[in-house]
Length: 244
Image (cartoon, rainbow, N blue to C red; front, side, top):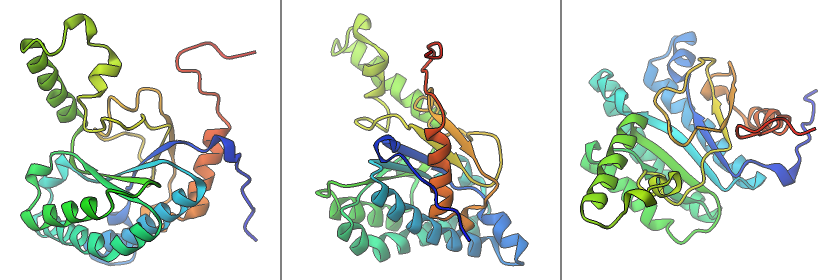
C-alpha cells in the first residue's frame, strides 16, 4: 500500500524546474529505440503538468532540449522535433481546459520552421490563461543565455538607456530569457546524475536541488510529491545563518 505524502499546502514551491533525464536509458532497459523512450517521457510530462496545476505551482520549467542536444544523431533530433510538434497540437485543448499558459525559452531561432510554428501556435492559443505557466526550455544553454544578456545590457549601457550604477542583479535578470518569472525554488533531476547540465545557471543560485534515480518515463505524481516534501523539510537560508 502506497503511503500518503502529507504536504504543507502553504509552502508549495512557486517555481519548479525539472531536468527530465533517463528517456534513453528507460528505452535501452526494455530493448526499445531511444525515440520510444522520448515518447514514453511525454506521458510523464503530461502527468507532471497536471499535478503541478493541482498543487498550486505557479511556474513549471522543463528542460526539453538543450543546445548541446543538436549534436545528437540527426534521426533522433528529427524525431524529437516531430514529437514536440505532435505534443503541442495534441495537448492544446487540455492546456486551455486547465488554464495553463505555454511559454518557451532558448535559442528558438535554431528550431525547424514547423516546430517554431507549432510553438507559436501553442503560446498564442494559451496567452490569456492565468494558471500554471508551462515554460519549455528548448535549444537552451545557460551560458549562452548569460552571454546574450550581457550583450543586451552592454548595448543599453552604450546607448545611455542604462547607467552602470543602476545595473543590479534584478536589472540584469530582466535581460535573461526568464524575464518576468521568479527564480526556481526547487530543481528536480531524474535519472540520478549529479549535475545541472548548463541549465538555468543564473536562476539556480539559491534553488533547492533534488535528484532521484527514477527515470523520467517512470516519474509520477508521487515522485513529485516526494520532491516537494523534501523541499519543505529544508530551511532556505539564502546565505544567512540558520535561525535558532
